[in-house]
Length: 63
Image 1 (cartoon, one colour):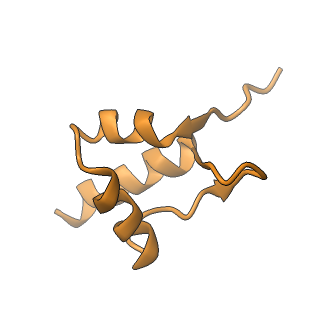
Image 2 (cartoon, rainbow, N blue to C red; image 1 turned 90 degrees about the vertical axis):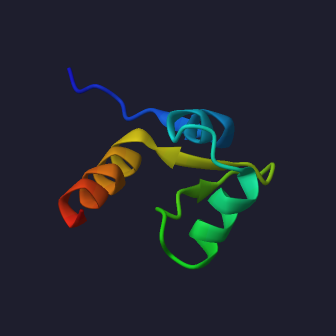
């Protein structure tokens, strides 16, 4: 059975990134430095954990 990819909330992402501000998160999305994720019908943003982890890995490789 294939495991489903978790959708992360903005607060979960901010917590995993060590407490960056919400404004920084949205600015990174606006300028394309963070995975776009999806916008739900209620306007909330969600990012697939796999995309988030791939983004983190790309930062490690670039360092």
